[in-house]
Image (cartoon, rainbow, N blue to C red):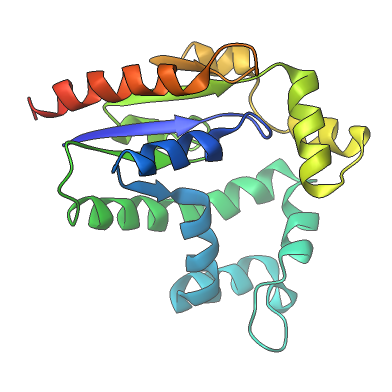
Amino acid sequence: MLKIGITGGIGSGKSTVCKVFEVLGIPVFYADQVAKNLMASDSEIRDTLIQTFGKDTYQQDSTLDRAYLASLVFKDAEKLEKLNQIVHPAVFKAFDEWCAKQFSPYVVKEAALLFESNSYQMCNHTILVCAPEELKIKRISQRDGSNRAEILARMAKQMTDSEKIKLADFLLINDEQQLLIPQILELHRQFIEGGKNY
């Protein structure tokens, strides 16, 4: 079974692409959602996060205080690295366990930090979803009401598309000019063929 990693900057439309793969019957592992679930439910991760970032990491009702944690890690690269060292191994393990239960020719792993976390090394191929910066800004603004400065600040924390292109095996152009579905169908055909050899 082939493992296909898919990533893209915020506003690129990687979630839309993943929904198309799901419509085609391909299981999708949403790494970022799994990470959030693990931080909420895994007692070992919870204890380690509290030891590392303090008791305010979780609220009185035991829910993760995302705003507090974000305020710490997004200003401090060292703290962000510590957070990743706690969460990423657990997500990698969850992905392996999930893959063992799938029976399709290939699976898709969607992760915002596919390259940054080195989890692309667990995949046979990687896809980068690309879109022009202005279009990404427009999409994010419409989606969550963020202003331009906030969006650009978030983008600045991510690897650029030009850096990711060097690591990606395939590109999907989601610029609302080129048709997206035919691009996905062509990759689906290739992966189905390739998956038969694994």
